[in-house]
Amino acid sequence: MGKISFPKGFLWGGAIAANQAEGAWNIDGKGMSVADVAMYKPHIDIKDYVNQWYVGLKDIENSMKAKEDTYYPKRRGIDFYHHYKEDIALFKEMGFKTLRVSIAWTRIFPNGNEEKPNEKGLQFYEELFKELRANNIEPLVTLSHYEMPIYLVNHYDGWVSRELVDMFVKYAKVCFDRYKDLVKYWLTFNEIDSVFRHPFTTVGVVEEKYANKKEAEKAIYQALHHQFIASALATQYCHEIIPNSQVGCMVTKTLTYPETCNPDDIILAQRDNRNNFVYTDVQVLGEYPRHLLNYFNKNNIDVKMNEGDEAILKQYTVDFISFSYYMSMVQSINAENREKVGGNLVTGVKNPYLPISEWGWQVDPKGLRVSLIDLYDRYRKPLWIVENGIGAYDKIEEDGSINDDYRIEYFRKHFEQIALAIDEGVECMGYTSWACIDIVSASTSQMSKRYGFIYVDADDLGNGTYKRSRKKSFYWYKNVIKSNGLD
Ligand code: BG6
Image (cartoon, rainbow, N blue to C red):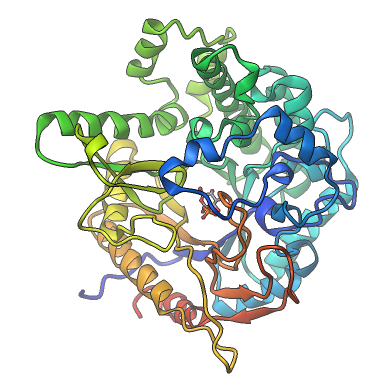
C-alpha cells in the first residue's frame, strides 16, 4: 500500500471499561452492578450466544448471595483500581494520545437512587483523570458501559421505568460538574444497540418477568426509549457546562453482507443493516426512522413517549459517532442449511472468504472500511473507532516474551483499511484498540481471551501475580503511533 497519512492530531490510543478492568467491586462504597452478577462461562457455544447469556431471577438471587469472586471474574478485573498509575505509565510509553475508560455508576451512586453521590468514588475518577492529563493522555469517558446498579434492576425493572432517566441524568450531571476541567470527550451508553442481544446487561430487563416474548420485546423498546432520552438530556447538560465538550453515541457496527446476488438475500442483508442504523438514526438525526415506527404500529408496540420527548431527541443530538467493530456478518435465505459462526453475541452464516479468530469471530478488515464509508456518507459526522481488536490465547516463551504476531497482523490490516477510508474522504477522529491491556472478557468472563498489548499475569480463576509485561505488539503499536500510522 502506498503511504497514506492519518490526519494530524489523530487520537491514537486504547480502550477499557470499568466493569472488566477495575475490580475492587465492593470497596470504597461501591454498590453491586449487573457486571458483578456475570458468571464465568468458558464453554459458550458461539452458535447460540443469546440463550447462553441469559440471566434470570434465580441467577441474580444466587449471585447476590455469593460473596466471593472466583466465578465472578468481573468483580476482580485486573485490579486497575489499584494499578492504574502503573498502567497509565505503560500507555504513555506506547505514546497514547487518548485512553477510553468508563465510570462505574455504582461507585458514584451505589444503588442508583441515593440523594448524594459517594465522595470516594468521585475521588477515584478525579485522580485517574488527573493522572491521564499529567501524562498528556486525553480521556474519552463512557458514562455507562454494561454496569448499571443491580438495585435498579431489582426495584425498578431497570430502564423500563421512566424514573431511571432522572437518576441517570443526575449521575451524568454530577460527573460533568466534577470533571468539567478534566474531560472533554464523553460517550453516554456503550453499544446502545446491544439492548436486544443482552437486555439484562444493557437495560436491566429480566425477560422472565414478562408474560411472553412479545411483552418482553415491548419492555425492551420502552427501556431503549428511556436511554435515548437520558442520553439526549445528558448531552444537553454537558454542552451547557463544559465549553467545547463533545458527546458521542456508541454503537456496535454489525455490517451484514448478502450471501449471493439473489435479491432475496440482498433484502435480508439490507434489513439487518437498516436495523443496525436505527440507533444512530435516533441519536444523530434526532428521530426514530419511519420503518421502526411502522413496526411499532403493526405489532402493537406502544412505546410510551412523554410530551416533549420528540423535541428532546431532535434538539440534543450527538457531536460525533463512535463505534466498535469486530467482524462482519452474512445473511442468506438458506441460512438453515449453512454453517454458522458467531461473535459479539450474534450468530450468522459463515463467510468462506474470511478467517475466524480462536473464538470464532470472522476477521474482516475491509468491512471496517465499508463501515466507515457507510456511516460517514449517511450522517456526515466525525467518526471515532473506539473498539477493535482480537481476542486470542497468548503464549509466554521461556524468556518471558510474548510474540503475538497474529495481533500485529490483525491491527496492521485494519489500520490499512482505516487509512484508505480516510483517503476517500471519511472524517475519522481517532482509534482506541480493544482492549489495550488484557482484561476480563465481556461475553465469557475469561481472562484467557486476551486482547492487550500488555499482558497481565492472571488466569481465569484469578490466580497469578497481576504483574504487567509488554508483548511484541506493544513495541509495534508504539511505532505506529510515533509515525502517525505511516510505519
Ligand atoms: C464489545 C464490548 O461488545 O466487545 C466490550 O463493548 C467487550 O465490553 C468487547 O469486551 C469484546 O467482547 P468480549 O466478549 O470478547 O470481551
